[in-house]
Amino acid sequence: MTISITLNFFIPKKIVQALKKIKVSGIVAYDWRDSDLCHVTIKAISKSDTHPDKKQLDEWVLKSNEIISEQKPFKVKVQNVAKFPNALYTNIKSKELLKLHKKLFKVLPSSQPHFENNEYNPHASIGVLTKDLEIISETEKDFGEFKVKEIQLVIWDWNGKKLKNCQIYHKFQL
Image (cartoon, rainbow, N blue to C red; front, side, top):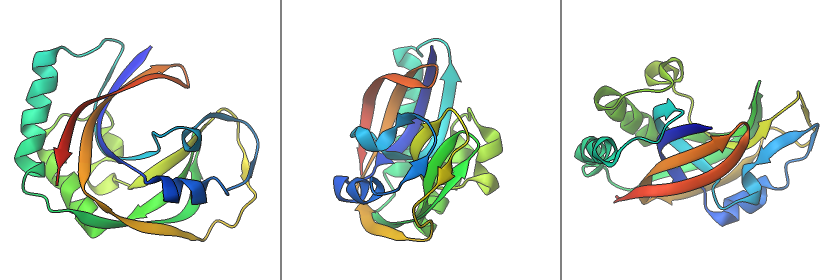
């Protein structure tokens, strides 16, 4: 069991439907498009084998709110398809998102520092991969644009490469 705590926002269903048209050859261990949980991680806060206590979660909410309360809704573009060794993803383009990530990086702990700050690559994971696969669909494509109006602090409970549970602990309105 792995418990991950992140700040993220969810991808609208209309764009998820467009992402469902991406075809691959190979095995996908978990397909985010089949759930209502296709999302963009803004900040990876914690990763452990135990659930954080309420006091710790509330502290992260407080620190996050200091930054997010000043954030206005912002637009993001969803475009192109690529893969990491363990994930199929689409790029998320937004200067406001990059600025927000850098502010949150300064005040919150990091479970993945090697992917944050100047190394932050905004993306929406489409699938968790078990084996190497090939993308059959066109990789250069615009999937749409939308305005982010809400950010969530989420507790993800993983059993290996399978999502066991997802709990939205707190919602921040922009």
